[in-house]
Length: 275
Ligand SMILES: C[S@@+](CC[C@H](N)C(=O)[O-])C[C@H]1O[C@@H](n2cnc3c(N)ncnc32)[C@H](O)[C@@H]1O
Ligand SMILES: O=C(O)C(=O)C[C@]1(C(=O)O)C=C[C@@H](O)C=C1
Image (cartoon, rainbow, N blue to C red; front, top):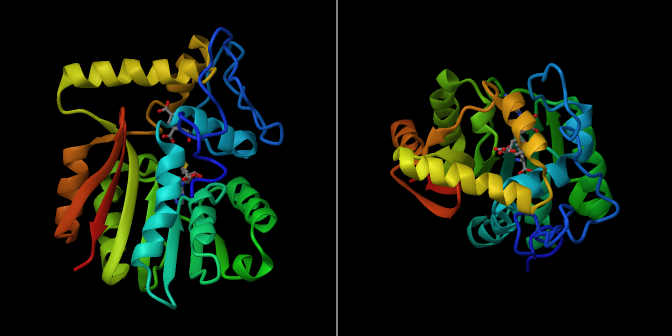
């Protein structure tokens, strides 16, 4: 079941915990390694999903996000359970299209229509290449890749909407509107999968999970310099919410049943059902 990016103890599966050395023990030689923050920078630019980030993104996210591989693979498993025939799925903030790929792999033979959206042209280019390489033509033809802003995108009726690690990059004041629009776009019985980095209500738990997340990154081969420079770059770009804020927002947007199905350190995934 968990092929490619999730069959290992770490988040993404392509790397194993380092032992003595600071390098991950195994590295897919075809996956460009993320060393964007490895050298000291005088002025650290704001993090953006540009060509450089897009080029090494699968390595970056799998070494940075605990549970990334498991969440991604499970999206496919959930699609298999919940999607009807003739379904439409959105993958919002798709980056390389990892969730889309997982879904197609699980639904082999009955791939739904999928619209994968990302604001970054570099990510859309990578998604096209990645999906074209890993999927049979019949499956790839069912995927529409759109370069666009999910805050303003017109949405069509859908059976499943995946928004993984993307809401955290939207302006906070737009998040409720976006989630409300997703609720509106879902057909009755449709599901929303929302995955995010989270902050804790309890400051002590926050401090502990924050430290453990940095330990996780170190265990995946990132140096203290890389961790600290990336953190500075992400400041004001990625603004995380608490789990309770996510659930309150889902409720306000109209979802009646929603719960957290996965949490690994300060990263979580929620599922919400359209009545
Ligand atoms: C952390 S990545 C998402 C990872 C991806 N969902 C996955 O599972 O591999 C966040 C993505 O959201 C995209 N993004 C940020 N703001 C966006 C917006 N307003 N509309 C569409 N995409 C956006 C970024 O370009 C980036 O590719
Ligand atoms: O919190 C961090 O330190 C991260 O690196 C997280 C995170 C994310 O959650 O999207 C931030 C930027 C990159 O897209 C990959 C991972």
